[in-house]
Length: 155
Image 1 (cartoon, rainbow, N blue to C red):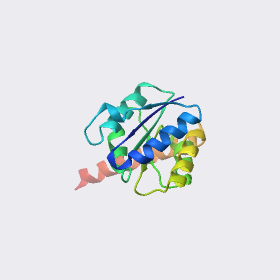
Image 2 (image 1 turned 30 degrees about the horizontal axis):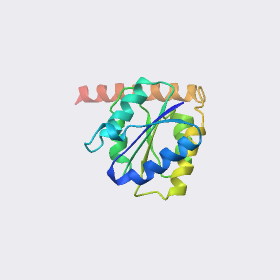
Image 3 (image 1 turned 90 degrees about the vertical axis):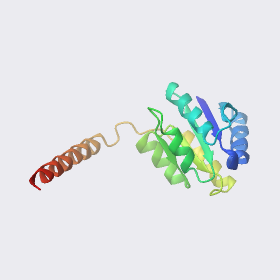
Image 4 (image 1 turned 180 degrees about the vertical axis):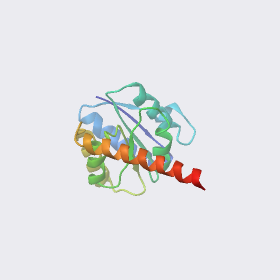
């Protein structure tokens, strides 16, 4: 699996640690931070790379994770999660098939960040887990939208 990583200025230390850790574990890691000098440019390039490489994962980092997550999500096919706990990473993979992890370097200590990363990389998507529930939800949302339209016509 290819892993694309990019970190903004406030997250360089954690990004470098994650890069080294993943390399030491035998992952094929590409640091895209150097591709751009603009703020959140690395997140843009990670999103582009992951959107073009279906079997890959991405990791983006900034101070709180929100800006990086926003930019990476601009690309079609990106399902990103911003995590501060292992349970978020696990559910994001199992339920949402997240392919990009956003981390806030100012919010996490190193051991928590590495545990989140490990969970993100080693948890599989539970394909078909709740297809009936998802179908029911979609139908419910469509019905709600239909009712809203009817109500707005009556006003």
